[in-house]
Image 1: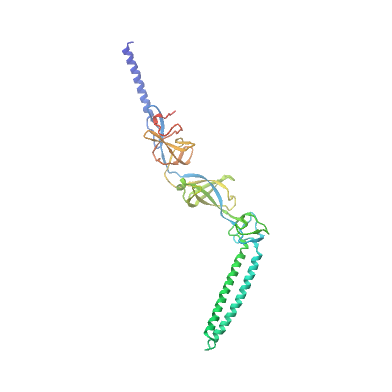
Image 2 (image 1 turned 180 degrees about the vertical axis):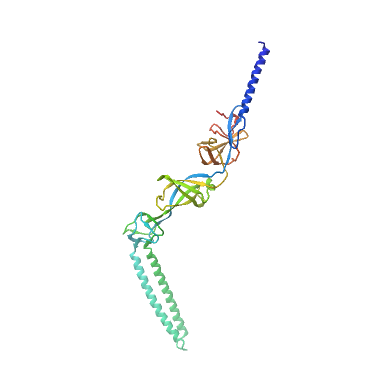
Amino acid sequence: MKKSNFIKLVIGVVTVAGIALGLSTCRKNKNTNNEGIETMAATPKRLLKTGLILKSTTEMKISLPGELKPFEEVQIFAKLNSFVKKVNVDRGSEVHKGDVLIELEAPELNAQLAEAYGKLHAQEAKWNAGRQNYLRLYNASKTGGAVSQNDLDQNKAIMVADSAAMASAQSNCQGLEALKSYLTILAPFDGVITSRNIHPGALVGPSGKGSETALLELQETRLLRLVIAIPDYLVAKVSLKDSIQFQVNAYPNHVFHARVIRRAEALNNQIRAELVEADVPNEDNSLKAGMYVNAKINSSENNNDLSVIKSAVLQNTEGNFILKITNGLIRRCPITILNKDDQMVKFIGDGLKVKDSVVLEATNNLKDNSPIINVNNN
């Protein structure tokens, strides 16, 4: 074969191969993207699966731990240094508001009260005598020259002073009576005694003055508070009246329901979260204060959150990332995952918006500022 004919044959083969490669590339470049449906972005050397960030407006379920607490609880201490005379309740006792829980006794207080009443009676007698004397002088003064005005004024002043002294004695007695009333400890609300730490004969006193432990602890358990700490990045997602579903370890097959009733409107400085509360009726006392719960808040807020398919999220020891494509280069954008299922991930992240192009199969091999042509699609 002549050399010229051989060259023509080689050129023909290369031309056919080039046309075939061009047709193959065109097929792979066919745009099948429809708001997040995969496309194949062709490069001279490599292929990369890309897609779009979508807007998510569906109801979001936020999964967080929580704790059940008594709706009301109080630690009961003695107001006065005294001895325990009688304890009418024990751990587990159900009580009603106004029930007598503990009776105390303080002999020295009784002595002080007796002395105070003695002084009061003496002042009453003195005031009564002075008043009678003043009235006699006043009636006598109606007869001209019988009583001087000076004597009348002096007796009136004595009567007023005796009246003030009597009022002071009455006030002292009332104060001691108020102190004596503290010797009878009443239930401040309906509830259950959850702790008892004293017995008759024990010496008790105010908190911090020889009595560090409460005499009793009372909790209202017919109504509980479900307290959930909402992280700062989720506070905008939770609203009052949002429904809550929660479970406790004691009843793994039962789902309880509640609604967000109260929120702190400020972050707790220690945990950087806002505390929200729900009221949980507990008439059958099946739930116990102190139980930890797994709660899901069904957020009704429509915040136009973003979402992508699950494979587009890169998760490693540094955090969670979306690989955004900008001007042919890859940029790792950190995100916070709000919710996810088997297919989609809902998230928030700075620098990301709806219809941004992202890598749909994110791997650790894809680094910042890597050009797309260097990405392997194997």
